[in-house]
Each structure stands twice: as C-alpha cells, then as structure tokens.
Length: 159
Length: 389
Image 1 (spheres, each protein chain N blue to C red):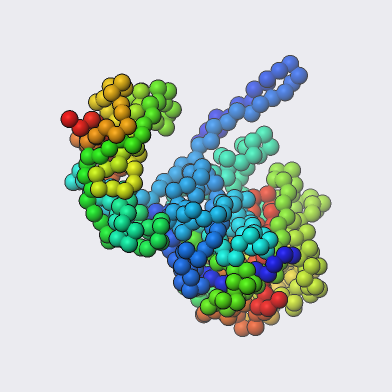
Image 2: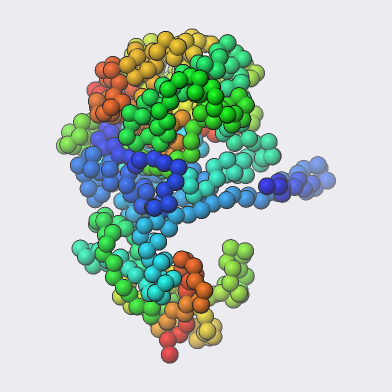
C-alpha cells in the first residue's frame, strides 16, 4: 500500500499542512439472521421480517433480539410484502464515491406492508415532481443478484 | 472515592479468529446475555450501558452504531469509550465513576472486537497521528519487537525466559474454557523453534487477533445487597496518559522516560496502603501483548526489582499455583479481542476474587486482585478489586 500523503506549504511563513488519505480494509459479517434475510431476498425475491410476538413488532431488516423486551426471536420469521408506503425521502444531486448510483439518487424510507419498521433504500422510475410522502411503492429486483440489499435495484411507484 | 461499586455480573463469549456466523451485535449480545444470566438480572434492570471498541478497526466510524438496540442499550443512558488499547479498561473506570457518583445503581460495561472484520495493523498505521507518526508507525508488532529488544538488552534475560512466560500462558489458556489459543505447548524448545514475526519477536511471542466480547454488570452498594451474585468490589481505578512518538516506546530505549505503569501503580498502591504489592495483592491479570512485555510489566508494577522480572517466572512465582499468580486465564497472548481485552482482565480478576474461575482458579486465596491495561502510546489503566472493602 503506497502512502499517498503529501505536505503542502500554505503560506509565506513556512507553515505546512499534512494531507492524507486513510485506507483501511474491512469486512462485515451479516450474521445469522441477516444472512437468512439476504439469501431469501436474492433467491426468492421476498422480504422476511422478524416478529416479536410479545411486543407485536415486525423488524425489517430483521434482528435476533427485540429492542423493546430483549427477547430472542431467532425463529419468528414472517414474510412481508414487496410493496409498501414511502415514509420520507431525500434527493442527492452530488453523490460521493461511497454512493455508487447514478445521480440524482432518491433515498427513501419505505414501510413494507406487514412491517413495523422503515426500510432504507432508493427510488427509481419516478419523476422528482411526483414524489409524495405516503405514495405506494413496489420493489424492483436486479436480474443478477448478490446477497445484499442492493439485490433490490430500487422501489418504483406502484401503478 | 465516592459511593461503593461492586461487580455483580460477569459474562464473555468464547474467542476465536473468525466468527462469520454472527454479526457484531449478535456476538456482543452473547456476552450481554451471559452477564445478565450470571447476575440473574434482565435487560430492563440495567439503567445505563457503556461500550468499548476500537474506532476504525472494523472500518466503521461509529462501532456502536447499529448495535445499541441489540445489546440491551435501547433508550438507556451511557456512551462508547475509545482510548486505544486501554478502551476496555477505560470503560470500566468510566462506568465506575458514574455509579460511584451516585448517578446510577445498575449499569452494564461491554467491550468487544470482531477482528475478522478489519485489519488492525492497517488501522493503527493508517489512522495514526499525522506529522509525527504517519509513515513511521509500525503497528503493535513492531513496537513490541523494539520493547523485547530493549528489555533483553537492559535486563540480561534470555529468550528462554520469554518462552517460560509463553508456556505459563498456554497452560492457563488450556484450562480456560473461553480462551482463544489453546496450543498445548510442551517445552521451551518448541517455542524457541517458532519463526520470527518481527525479530526478535517470534510468532509464539505475540498475541493473536481474536473475535469476542466481555460484559460486566455493576451495582451500587445498596443495589448490590439485593443481588443474587457475590459482589466483587472495585476498590480503585486509575488512568494515566501521555503522548505517542515523543515519549519512549513500550520499552524506553533512552532510559530517561517515566513509565505510565509506574505512575499509575504508585498512585493506586499509596491510596490503598499497598506496600509490598505481591503480598498485599494476591494475583494480577496483566495486559501483555507479548511475553517480553509481561516481564517488563512485572518490573514496572513493582512486583520485583528492576531488571529482575525474568526471575519471577524462572522461580515459578507467577504460575497458577505460585505465590503471586499472573494471568492464570492465559492472558492477552492467548486471547486478544482488543476492545474487550482489558474488560476480560477485570472479568478474570473478578472471577478469581469470587473463587469462580473454575479450572484456572489460582491456588492462593484471592481477596485482592489487580487488572491492568496498556494501549497506544503506552497508556495505563488499573483496576483494583477486593472481596470486601
């Protein structure tokens, strides 16, 4: 790995600023529950939620422990819809390198039918002027899919 | 010192190099549930939650982000602590301050690292102090290679003495159900045959990269009286800091630097009437990234005279059945989930005080124990534990 840092002289008084770039490899385990959700999303194009029967909460994305009562939910899987309601949104016209989609990117929080929680994703096939909180949306899947939430290309308006 | 604070719950995960089966929150959740079970408490009983993890080691700028809800911290008070290698002990001290100040009665302290998610040496060298550090930082292995060289030069000890420390650690680790490396080492020759990692440090001379978590539950004195578990009292904590790259490294080659270990332990010994540490304290869990550093720490914590640390291990004094056992758990050289490593030192020392360490319980009765932490620019955090105050 090459050191990409450079020293810049910033004024006539021989003062310097050190410019760097931090390059750190990393991985992240999706975990037991997350991996099952992603497998089903990729292979069957379905969204699974984890339900706490006691608190009557359906978590999408799923988690193994209920945040309210701390119960273990490991096997309380429920299928939720691939359709939902837009809770809120924002439009990004100046994406960074960490946002690898074509600009403008419409980010939305979608509450899938059957889920208690919002699901953060992107919107497509929609004019910016037509965006409305409460609009109905439908997931569009990529033809080639990884075990990733980006197996979903975006959510489009439900006709 | 404020109100009295007891450890009333102890839990840890097993430790290994890779845990692809669990996400970070799922792994930490295992330790949290273990501590709750040990304390016979439920998550709703915890008023505040304090977390330790190394920023950037897993490539995440907020390691606690996306975790609070799954580790029983949802809507709780608390914070995440990162002070480098000492994080897992700084968080022990920080949570102690809150309970000692009377702000909470029952809190949880959790340390974790999932090192299969990152590259520790890349993080240390890439995200270190610019101007004076970046470009010349070696990471921990290089630092402790320098320490080993300095110690060898100054003490007259031989590689055999470091190997004795390694044998002792492995003996403990093999008795500890939670330890990571359980190698079953038989002889000094076996250790001296292991290849060099960075001369003069051999592969077997240095700690592994582990995934794991450790959780402690504290109670105030009034709350502890109602708890099911035997209390282990936190008698004292101390943290001592300095700057890196201008001070000496872990083994000071100038001979002119003040060691944070000495400043820290002298404060703790003075406050607690400890005049002869290896008699007044019954055992210690030291943060020793390498066997060579353990020898150095014996001297810095005044367990022996300067230059004589190697004699303690040569005489078997620091063995499990010795007069002053050190790291019966196997220590850091066997298990190193960084953000949890100092928390584990406190957990293991507390288990010794409780008499609950199981197969690696030391022979000597432990009424007082010390846990140490070391990190980044040779910072020191100490925790002194007692069966009664």
